[in-house]
Amino acid sequence: MTWVLNNLELILQLTLEHIRLSILPIVLGFVIAIPLGWLAYRYRLTRGLILTLVGLLYTIPSLALFVILPPLLGIGFLSEANVIIALTIYAVAIMARSVAEALASVDQGVKQAATAMGYSGWGRFWSVEFPLAGPVLLAGLRVVAVSTVSLLTVGIVVGVQSLGYLFTNGFQRGIVEQVLAGVVMVVIVALLFDGLLVLLGRWLMPWTRVDRSSRRPIESQQGVEPPAQAFGRGVQQAGAR
Amino acid sequence: MIEFRSISKRFDDGTLAVDDFSLVIPSRRITVLVGSSGSGKTTLLRMINRMVDATSGELEIDGENVSSIEPVQLRRRIGYVMQNSGLLPHRRVIDNIATVPRLNGVPKKQAHARALELMDTVGLDRDLGERYPSQLSGGQQQRVGVARGLAVDPNILLMDEPFGAVDPIVRADLQQELLRLQRDLDKTVVFVTHDIDEAFLLGHQVVILEKGGRIAQKGTPAEILANPASDFVASFVGADRGKRALSIRTIDGAQVLVDGDGNLAGRLVEAGPA
Image (tube, rainbow over all chains, first blue to last red; front, side, top):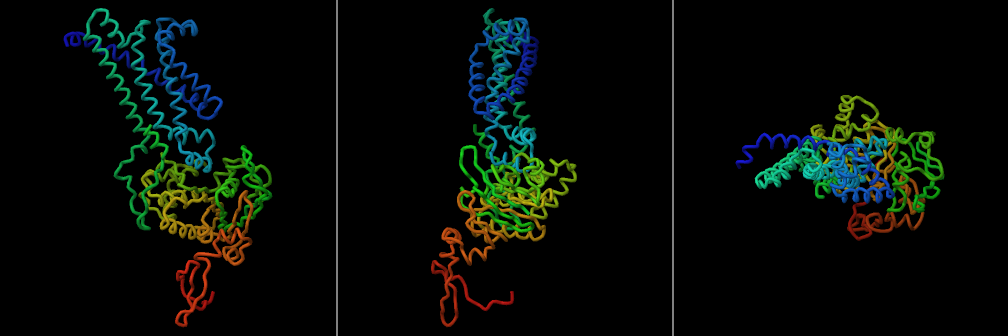
């Protein structure tokens, strides 16, 4: 513990840096994945194309990406932008498929009902389909968050400071404790993001955490009625995925 | 009045769902389209609010051709109730009922006040307004569906097998409620079902459909039962068997009615003044 106790300030500083750098790729990845995922969900032609493409993106090694991106985009090798863009690409690669699956998980009957009530296409997407895709979107986003936090450590090879520093520096100096401290902090940051996303989901999707005890229908004036239909089936399936 | 004139519908995959269908649906009455699956009944219903567009023919509502009305605007003035209620699971009951008025730009407060009134109309406890649909029983959900269909006080209410998924006791309740509502509110109701008993119970006009939306017979339940137009109709309504084929037997000097299965159905008495 000596190393850790002597370097608390460094660890804290790297952790904050790590959190700061993780946020942008997660948010950007999510936003960019929405139209892509929608295209993949909506048209058969674009589905195969987009899903294959994002699948391939994910197979590009991060080191290769750090080398390819700067000349392609005219940014510096050692810039933060290089790492952020690379991580955004991975986030999109994971998230686009999630968005397509999430939109497909929305109950067909509910979509038809929304149309029948007079939602326009755009209105129906944002008011009905997108929120109801929420649980599956959230599941995808949680994977993205954890993956981004973990991948960010690689950024140290192009000199972008993060908890990855503890890995390389600790390895070079042969301090096992320093490497372990890095691993533990990465896990903690990942858990932090995950926990925040879960809380965010609960706050934004109150209908998914309907209290079990109140799920039991109250008896109507007409006498005993059967238990509620498994409504919001899409949502429940989504949770199971 | 809703008028179908030589309506046909061919889907993209080539199936002819409706072939040369013509029908007049009178205002302020319940018209029931009844048929087995594949009879095109739901397709016909959805043509009224343009969820399905006819391939050929004309459909008019009060003399106005629906093809000249923008679909989204058209749908916002026609009530629609479907099987499994079709409620939005992420909205509270009160917001579900207020959906269409809100789409039409009615302020939230006003729309909610109206929603609470509608909950009274369909026999729902106002306290349920704060709940999510999944917290309601199947019967309650259907009531919410009906309340939502009535929210903009539409002249026309389309109902697509609305009571198909609830148990028989609740269904009987909801059917009576619908009859009461229609009497009180004077709506033009177009109701789709595959259940002939439901059709005869609810319909002022019953339209029996065969494959491809061909009308096998239309008329009041009494007209159809008295004179089935074909063997198909007779068999569909069960005119020759079961509880609809009653015969008179005399037991101890009194005349009793026995149904097609040999079960006692009732007693024959003098008809009172109509």
